[in-house]
Image 1: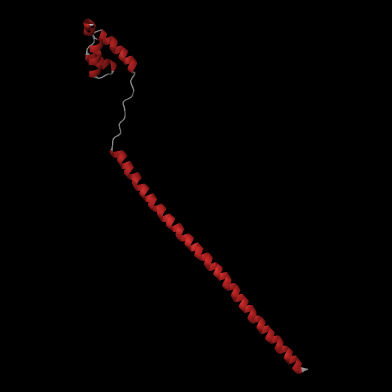
Image 2 (image 1 turned 180 degrees about the vertical axis):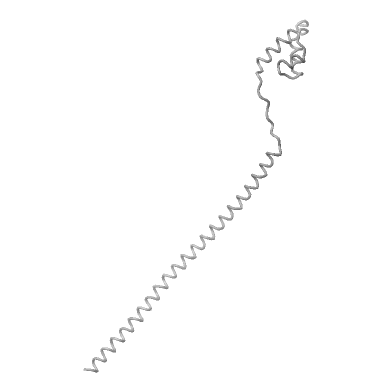
Length: 137
């Protein structure tokens, strides 16, 4: 009976060792599959990170370029004086009064000073509506 017990014990020990070895292989295989998937995921994430870094550097370069353009535009705006038109003057009333004054015999200087017009405009009004213009017509 001792021999039978020893044979059974050896068989159980042999089965336990084989089971442990089989479980070790399965465990190693599972870790290999896990690490292979993890390595592929890490490679994909690294490629995505590189793509994002490239986009960030391209955006930074574009921002620097736009900043340079903006500064040159601002400098140009300060350097070049802008034309500001004179405020509008009441043309119709001024010309009506100037025509009446020219008809009354006012001089070019009086027309220019009173009606806010240039000497050339006053001269033209005087020629068109002055007392000599009525005498000729």
